[in-house]
Length: 130
Image (cartoon, rainbow, N blue to C red):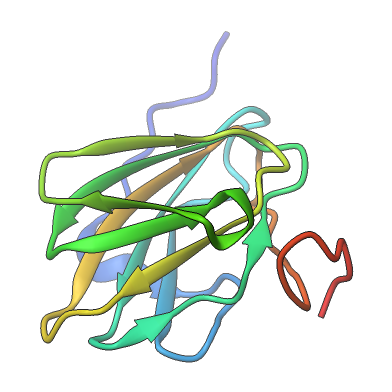
């Protein structure tokens, strides 16, 4: 018999996963399934995450609010996300989330693992964990 359906109410979502200055990560569905997890990422105005990757986890991003940018390919590629856009970040792909604007950016993050993996790096292509 499968486990019961689980609902996480918005009022129960807490800041609980790896943090970077200016970036708020809130676990919504974490440690409840062997194969998937979900969280909310809020980027404060004029902030950016560290360069990082998500280990063996594929990541899907849904842009809920604001206008943010995904930087990848050694910092050479910038892709803007507007509300309603999706992005796929393959496992191990180095990237950075950037909010150059004056408003908060909110993205819904889904990963292919029970608990989100975040490996902050010293810089592009270093492979060195902070």
